[in-house]
Picture: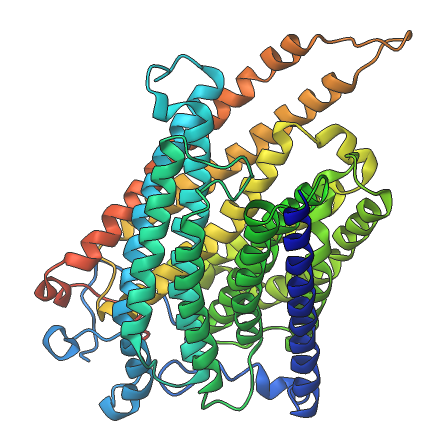
Length: 73
Length: 489
């Protein structure tokens, strides 16, 4: 019984250390994001998903239709 | 391959322009396909166990002669196959693919990912076999024998580190909201899993700390693992397919940080009324109600982006599923917040309502978004179209109707069950005997089996289509037209 208590003490200390580390990483991520300007220019940020290959203003997905394609790729 | 078939999923006709995006997709292709094949196989296995479990709920003598198919084992095998088999493999593919695309960099060391994936699926297979042979633990959501935990943790860590490395290697300047969601989830999941394994099974905590840890873990697997990845995929695919940016990007970022802040506490609402400190229950209730902020944020964004584009949504297999999932997210989360209130919880706790709610979240929300993602990613991996529009329609309607019937039927049955359990007469004694209450749930349990049959049809249609797509000879596709090709069609 004592053994279990002791190993439990060690485990809880390790977990608390890792928990604090974990929280620290999250706090650092938030601070980094703010300093890095991630919370500015939202208009621009929202458009990073588009590029020349799949541009803004084009529908990128449709059901397959039965017709043959008109344009040749 | 695209030169042979004449089909390309990308817009640009200039090969050199196309190369970049295509290279990113190609770099994750092998491991991505491995994860998807595993996911689909686990989906089918999980479905079979689901149907068996559901049928046994109203007809207990069904398959009762087989020890390995007793309800407790079949039901746990279903849960573990779906969460650790289907959901995690789907996440490994789609989460990492979205991450790679948004980082605008090719994936390196794809082979490592493949090894990790092989070990992960080996671990899940041994785990499910253990459950079926009676070696399961008694801890919900962690039923797999403890021996497989190191295998799963090890292979996950490889995958997680890989995702984090991909992020560190990014060529893009801005961190898109999907990247936040997926990156955070990659940290959250191992933390949840390892803490739960250690504190409940390996060096067990005493007394009520165990169920507290258990529900912190189980609820957060949904809230801090499945949810962020599904939202990340939705935040990428909805604006991507529609070709217009998200309605309010500002709100979406607030949504991420509020989710990160509140969700972690919410799991304790599973223990309302239980023998744990009341302040802890209250903290869980407060966090559950605070979750309305990130949920309403997603709802506003999703609705306002899609509004006026219903035609495009309907014509895209991807968006049909993703938008269904996003709407379900709003509904299931608001219902969940309400269920955390003590007055509501008194009725719904320990009833089938909770089961309906769990499937509303994991299926109607998470799984539907994963289906949508797979419809988008496969043509880009294979450089060819989905062979059959009909199979996609069967898949969508069977699953959409099936899960709606499931949630509505079991929710009604659950509320009736809860009210009957609580009903007292004037002298304060119970009105409905327990067996009577159980008998009254039978029609609703039968409705679940009907919905299960619909879902099974949907899943098999999907699996057939998926493998057809995977193994179809390349030359067939030259006739196939424009799943994705936007060229004036």
